[in-house]
Amino acid sequence: MVVIMITADASVETAVEALNQGASAYITKPLNVDLVLATVAQALEKQRLVIENRRLYQAAQRELVERKRAEEESRRYSEKLQELIEDIIKAIALTTEMRDPYTSGHQHRVTQLADAVVREMGLSKEVAAGIRVAGSLHDIGKMYVPGEILSKPGKLTEIEFDMIKTHPKAGYNILKTIEFPWPVAQIVLQHHERIDGSGYPAGISARDLLLEARILGVADVVEAMASHRPYRPALGLARALEEISQKKGSHYDPEVVDICLKLFAEKGFRFH
Ligand SMILES: [Fe+2]
Image (cartoon, rainbow, N blue to C red; front, side):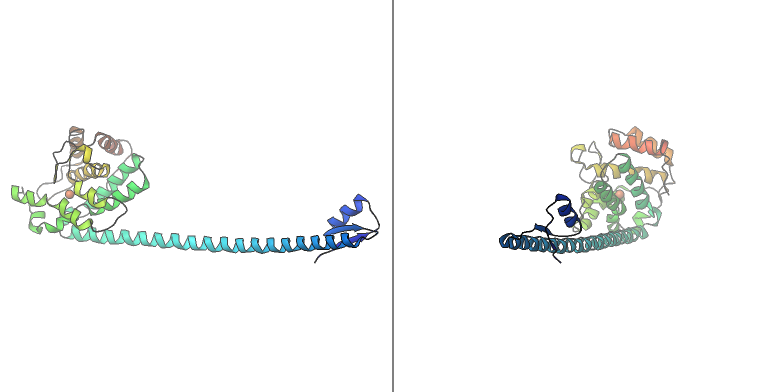
């Protein structure tokens, strides 16, 4: 509703009071027709703008609520998808370990240590997510190695060891077809490479070695040495940490080794 106050009282107080009471405009007598028409037109325009403003505000509010709802739905969906991916990865990891019961839980424990190293180094969430996936699947290529070799008690022959050494490349071939947002296949390919070029399969050195592969390589060795293997009893954690300390800077990335030692010595890290 548009209210225009018409009065014979020309005082400022009356005008202010009229406007405070909700009048859209204020005209004093004697009336001038042109002024009345212009005032009415102005008041109507003002009213139209108020209504339009309110309509726009309500539309913006509705859009905001709708956008928030859509964002929430998309967040829940991507969380569900992430959980699904992790479950599939766990299932694949279990398949690998079923063929190699002696190393059951190995990939999980290696991932646990590698993840702790990544966090201690202050690396990004992306690096952490990539290393968790690569760690969980790093020995997937062992599917191509005959089960008798994987669980053979006692020392392996050179040929048998050569067959074991094919697993990083086999793992790479399996994983390279999946478009992960992280270099998972590359990390798996490089997890037995060493910074001085003495590793396998390609014998590449520090310059070409992904940081994630250096981290995984150290975590892999520590876990493997600390655990029981069909061809030898567990060497123990102390021996494993001694190994990485001795070969720090030659086989293993010095910073990764230092962080790893710190995790066990000062941060109370334990495999579980
Ligand atoms: Fe491996």
